[in-house]
Amino acid sequence: MKLPERVNIVDVGPRDGFQTEQAFIPTALKIRVIDAISRSGVKKIETTSFVSPKAVPQMADAREVLRGIERHPGVSYTVLVPNRKGAELALEESIDAIRMVVCASETFNRRNVRMSIEESVSECEAVVRLAAPSKIPVEVAIGVSFGCPFEGPTPQDRVSELARTFADMGFHEISIADTVGMANPLQVSSLMGRLVKELATECELSLHIHNTRGLGFANVLAGLAEGIDTYDASIGGLGGCPVTPAATGNIPTEDLVNMCAEMGLETGIDIDAVMAASRIVEEFLGRRLPSHVLLSGTNQQAVAAHRVSASLNE
Amino acid sequence: MKLPERVNIVDVGPRDGFQTEQAFIPTALKIRVIDAISRSGVKKIETTSFVSPKAVPQMADAREVLRGIERHPGVSYTVLVPNRKGAELALEESIDAIRMVVCASETFNRRNVRMSIEESVSECEAVVRLAAPSKIPVEVAIGVSFGCPFEGPTPQDRVSELARTFADMGFHEISIADTVGMANPLQVSSLMGRLVKELATECELSLHIHNTRGLGFANVLAGLAEGIDTYDASIGGLGGCPVTPAATGNIPTEDLVNMCAEMGLETGIDIDAVMAASRIVEEFLGRRLPSHVLLSGTNQQAVAAHRVSASLNE
Image (cartoon, rainbow over all chains, first blue to last red; front, top):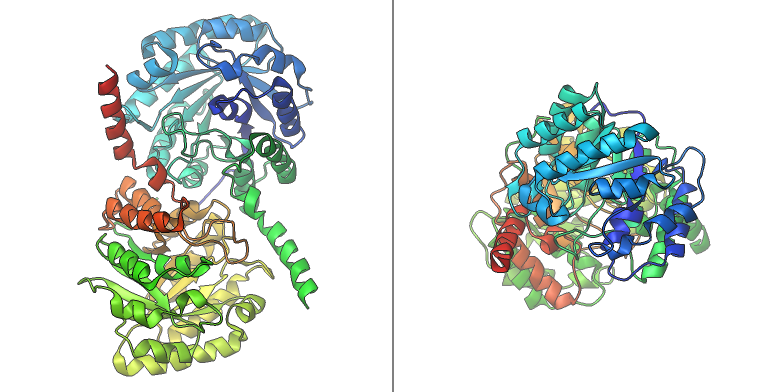
């Protein structure tokens, strides 16, 4: 298995994680968490989204969050938008990239952003045009790229055609998203292998993986083996599944950092600092987040703990 | 990625799972759960262990369990033993295989079975001799084959030498065990690739994977890619980590069945029947087991559920 030497981890917890929480998270806490992630060596944070506060009340403070955070040099603060309206609002703030989302299933896209895929694609074109003067990079996530809970498995051709459209429009990065955790490793391998051949010379390709059915890290491994070196994750595994609220959502950032470290892949991220950010959230929410490493510690931490305990017992 | 077409899944829940539970599980419930697993298409069940009841009170009813279960044709009912004493007791019962366990770290082996590795190896030789007249297959698990919480990473040479010793002794199957979930996919790939070359013509090689740090299924994928086609798992992911009790232990059987099914690998197992067995245990323990699929359902189940819900809404 040939894997990339360096892996870029984007923390989407402040957006994809927080947005699934029912109770409003105070703006000051959001800012504190983003600042904590900024100190961990994570180089890109999906900070918030500009979306209708009626649709997603949790993101109503997007502007205040962006104005309140400390900007760490070398860290990119990005936002998600569903349409040109969101992009216009985002462009009034200091941001480092704008991400659009379009779902590869008609039913899911309509439920997600109340537009047909065609309408979303035309919003994408508008967003590229809007962002052009500022030279702020534009990205697009293709949601339910592997499977849709309403329509079943997603045809590979549909994802490939959408990705081609977005590359031609001038998007800098295309994120292939397993929005509800329906992907399997062979499917990841096959789709990403194809997209790398079709598009890797024109734009960045990244993966947004959910762990809904426990296959998150097997899917990451399959992606790594195809040369994909950029992954979304969220501190602690914050954020549930959009269709099965109790189920797991995003892969946990610290678990991904640990996986990379154990395999000798460089991330530049201090896992203790990530876990410190997760613990702020755990404390506020009053419940355990799904990250495994947050509970078990890394291999090295386990060994260190047991050395101490063994020497105390003898 | 070239994967085996057929995957054998061994359910070790009744042994590795139940043994970590503090409260005694009534013998009748153990029998009910084993019978439920027997009906799922799982072809091998690690049923109990013959170990000192002082060391593991949960397994004190080994004999009663073996005498109480219904034997389903085609299902192999196996037991774990730590030494020749256990094997003697096991051989008095109707069993289909005996498994020994030896840990690849001196510290872990002493804490696990109160013997040096050398003493355990000599017990293995005695067990092979004891079982020979009955022609009951003997297996051995090499514990902490990837890392030990007391000694750190396990040298590959040590596992290879132990495996060579056991193959020469006449063991039919060698299970490479990640007892406390310290393995990573590259390590699995490297060790299993080596053992396949060294031993696959002489005995069966299998993997016993824990999900302590979330890498369970990434490690399974790495094992599959090396041609390993037999995996231990436990219903619902029953069973914790022997050194971090709150942490995850065995990979859940239904999640592994789902992974294989999604990748088109045949297991012969009815996932609904596995989940039915898990739910018996969940109901008795009064808590949720860590399986992801048990909570989210399979992809097909999710699609079916949302088709119904969509049609009710329109």
